[in-house]
Structure formats: structure tokens, C-alpha cells
View: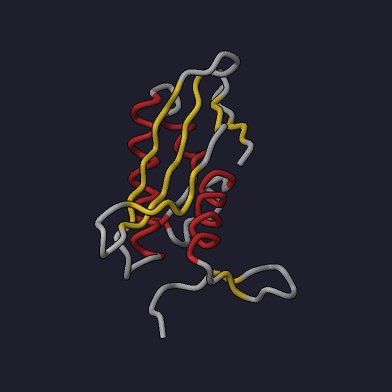
Length: 135
């Protein structure tokens, strides 16, 4: 039996999200959409791109570094038996202040190479630091 945390689904026929790729995608979606600051129950485990953008959105490098740290901590908690890596990078866009890309991978124990769990595109930060995404 796995000691990895489970994620309950709100779908009436699924029950729990157990597939590793789906769990990682759920956590990244939660990171992107969670407004943050709505509860201090898990103060040390906040996971919110919106909250980070409000604090660090003027600096793409800082926002990426802080996002990477939050997501890496989250992945370690949710995949304790795997060596996961998170990479958050920024890129220039024409219609937005900048964009960011999130990649989550697990290191294959036999080859030592990363195997993608989540690849995201089109997370755009507007001039007024709002987030627009096509996840």
C-alpha cells in the first residue's frame, strides 16, 4: 500500500485521483487557480501562484524562483517515494507583461532521466499582475 497522500475527486464516479500524472496536474492547476490567503489552516503549505504574483509579479525571475520552491515542496509532500523536479521559467510575450511555463518531472530510477508529469503552456501575467491561462 502506498504512503502517498490521496486526492479526493468531486466527480461522482471517480472517487480518488490516483494516477500520478493526473495528481500532479491537479496540484499544478490548484497552484494556478487558488487565490491564496483564504485560509490560514495550512499556513506553511500555501500553494498559490496568484498570491505569489501579487507579491513578486514585478520580477519574473523572483516569481519563477518562488513558484518553483512552492511547487517543489508540494510535489515532495505528495510524491514522497519519487524524486520529482519542478522547473518554472519565464518568457517574453507580445500582449502580456510576460509568460511563465511550468514543467514537473519524476526522475526514472533506472535511467536517471526525467520523465514528464506535467508540461504547461500559456500562463500569462498581465500588466496589472492578473493571471490568464490556457492550461
